[in-house]
Image 1 (cartoon, rainbow, N blue to C red):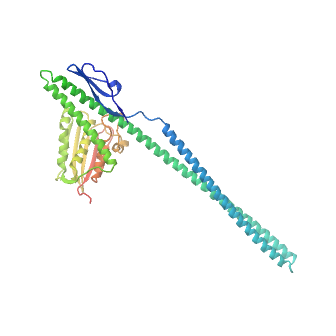
Image 2 (tube, helix red, strand yellow):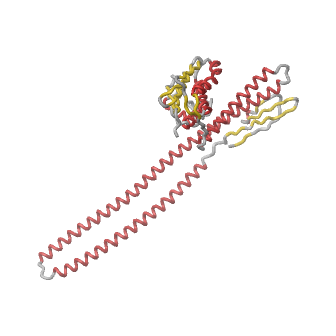
Length: 402
């Protein structure tokens, strides 16, 4: 990561040195120039392929060494086996020759020519059978050695496939990380610029006769930007906690309807200003379950925020909560653009956006929501057809597993 900052000469009023890519605001108040350095962290340029090439070269060298060592070991084993087999056969031939010589000496005493001829024929047959059996054994040994080489080759091929798959996943994760860092740095820079420019305007307006209304508007802008930065930082902290296996969830038995109403009420002003109908449906009886109020509120606010974001004016967003057997089921439905079928599962992955060009978020909300629901022992999923709206559902068990 690189820390970028800029220092410039002061001019009249506020201006942003956007040409440098850093959030630096210059102002002049009371005839004195000052510099506000909105320092943000942005990703370095992507590294060259030299490191990848060095890794590939190191892997190639190591494989060549391993192959040479394996070939030498196999060759030594084969040579040793051939020597042992050769000695065993020579010893067997020697024993057979001695036995035959002894038999010949005994057979020559009183044996007819016909008998001796038959003995020679039988020996020739036995020698032929022995040669065939040895040839078969040699062929079997060669086949086993070839199979061993083929097995090693196949295992190497599978290893290469696994390595390639892992490399592709690593490249994808790296590209996603770079995109994510770019989005985060861009969002933080924009929010910091809003804070800086609003503060500058407040500084200018305090000298006017009736600055209250202008100051109030700019304070509200600062509050909104700070709230957005706080949510973004909170998401980053949650992701770090999830990756470390330390996501905090404190379960307490409570009324589910209360948290659902709280989430819906927080979006009523936005729904009214956007012309969206926001409804809540709480099915009787009283819905009670063990849950972390703050965390489930976080999940609902995320789902409602997405529904509001993708629902056009005159659309409708409905939050329904009901008990189904031993589970409490939440459903947040909208009449927005919908989600393609092949994205219904991937939307819950880190840094994933349904639309890759959508910059109204960094792709962490649904991932965090999924982890929070799973930490409660529940399930979360999405149902949708492109152009027909979406429904995000999650469940909570009514009894916490011990």
